[in-house]
Image (cartoon, rainbow, N blue to C red):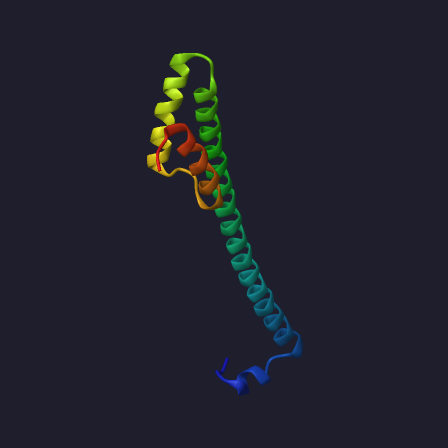
Amino acid sequence: MTAGVEGLAAWPPAAVATVVAALGAAAVTVVAGLVGGVWALLRWRRDVAREERDRAWSRFVWTVEQVCHGDVGRGEIGFASANTMYEMQILRDEDAVYGKVVLRMITGRD
């Protein structure tokens, strides 16, 4: 086989069409794989962020429930947890605004 355009012109048209189709299919497969990989990565990051937010809110709700409980021991545990949460800044973004207000009311901090 010869290299260059002259060699390609000597091929039968069906062989050229087969090679072009195979290259096109490979290119489409690579692009689809890249798009799928990026989509999966973005979805995974969104899911992780949602799970972290849910976990933070469940801890926050548990803390508030303990503070509001009638039992003195649970109230002390809730108060200690509220102090810790206030220092940790476990809530993020817009959740932090509401969480800080409640934690300030519980702990008496400014």
